[in-house]
Length: 163
Image (spheres, rainbow, N blue to C red):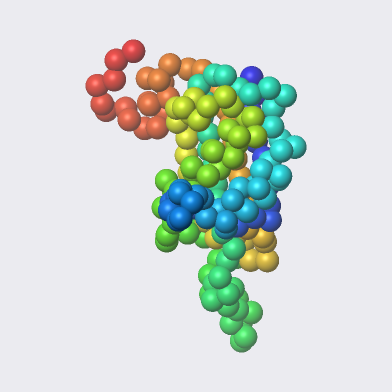
């Protein structure tokens, strides 16, 4: 299996929202349903011919639009107050809540059979570069090596890990 890697946008990353309860029972908020439809449309061209059925590693980078105050440029020097490239987004939402909607939509669109196949992955969030749109970067790769090697690749070398 080849690695599937793609960038979709412009789309602002969206954190998972809780199911709401109303007179008709439980429902997903409209803003979340709309986001899922838009994301599904953007990722559709990248899906594999048939759903993957192996253990997977899914890496996600959520790139948020840069706020106006982070685009400030000093008039005298012409320099920006913040770096022009990506800047870490150390604020809400939590990265755990960013993964779930992305994984769910990819499952619904037929990227893999079930999200229980995802055995590892990295999630990062950042502000976009100046004058660049928000976007989501995804890499799906098979996790074909033994778990001990994957765990060691994360830097857990001093622990008692048996093969």
